[in-house]
Length: 211
Image 1: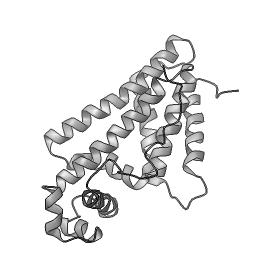
Image 2 (image 1 turned 180 degrees about the vertical axis):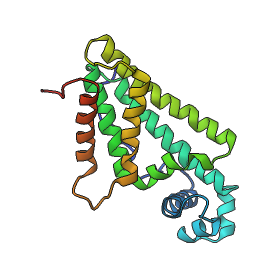
Image 3 (image 1 turned 180 degrees about the horizontal axis):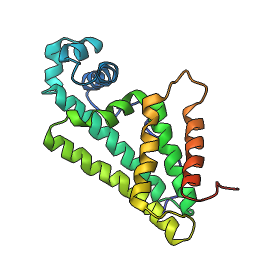
C-alpha cells in the first residue's frame, strides 16, 4: 500500500492531458468564460475569442458547448477521485489519511479555484447522460472519504454517529473553498488545506497529529 501523500501532480500545467494544443486552448478559454459568466450566458463565440480562434475552429474539436463542459467536468471529477483515493489507500491511521485527503482536496480547490467552480457548480447544465456519468464519479469520490471514516470508527479513532452525513459535510466544506478562495488573499492554498484538515479532524472527534 502506497504511503499517504498530498497529491499535487499535474497542477503545474493544467489540462496537460488535453490534446492537440488547440483543443487545450479552447478548453482553458471555456473554463474562464464559464467561471466568469456562467455556462448559459457564455456563447461559443465568447470561448473561441478568448482562445484567439474563429468560432468555426471550435467545432473542429468540440461538437457543442455542452461537450466542452462535459470534458471539463469529467477531467475535474476524475482528478477529485484520484486525490481522495490516493489518501484513502495510503499508509497510516485513519486520522492521518483523512487529514491528507482534506489537505489535498482543499489545496486543489483553492489552487485551481476557477476550474473547480466550473467543475463543481455547473453540473446541472449537462444533459442527462453526461450528468449521470459525473454523478457516478462523485459517488466514487464520496466512497473514498467514507472508507476512511469507516476505518476510523472501527479503530476507535473517530466519534462519528452518522457516517453518510459526515461524508457529505466533509466534502461540502472542501468544495466550497472554490467559491470564495481569492489568490490575492492572506492565506495560500497550502495554508487553507492545513486549516481545513484540522477542522475536519475536530469534526470527527480526532486530535490533530501530535496533539
